[in-house]
Image (cartoon, rainbow, N blue to C red; front, side, top):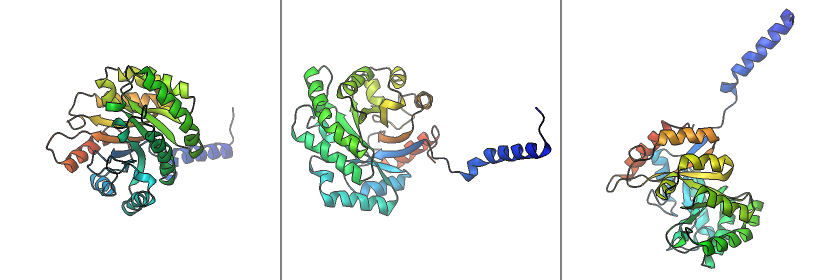
Length: 285
């Protein structure tokens, strides 16, 4: 095919524009890094945002409520204090978590239905897209078919509310990927997904490198980056391999650091290490 000089110059100019587009059109990072407010010692406390800023994080995962404050973010003044802390520090409320479900199980305690319903409204007001629903300790679903059925029925009731608000409810538990998918399929709503925690999955005896592709980016709404009693990169988890697996499935979104602090160690120093370690594996800016 013969190209005139004018056409050749035009095509060359277009190629140059395409090649130079990286510096002209900002590319949104695939990942954002936050931490759990309870892990930085400030559950449902505006000061968690100050700690996140000090550590160099982009967000904080906020507890919806606590044992001392069961109403939590359903109280306007409490919600407003979180909004103001975010504006003041420039740190985002990255997601919500109802850790109280470990103590007061969603599968058996009627009041938890109100918590989950109200957490959707709080998430909407905070411009948060994901709510972690915890299923450990008293709320553990392993070998509990009755409990699973109760959770499915309760999720069926709240899922349409979450869908309307554009919120995802993330199940975090010791269940296998297939068991999570069974619950999600039984609920039948795009508003219910898996909140994946590599440390929990390994502790429960699951192969995370088989589970990640099984769930895929479509079913994983958010992830915890956790070690128990050790800093990230100093425990048994192979984070470089995890990073490669996350890239392979195309996961994007928030990563929340949880735990990863040795006993007696300075929390801020540990979290600065954890942040820098993850920055060596992922691009957050």
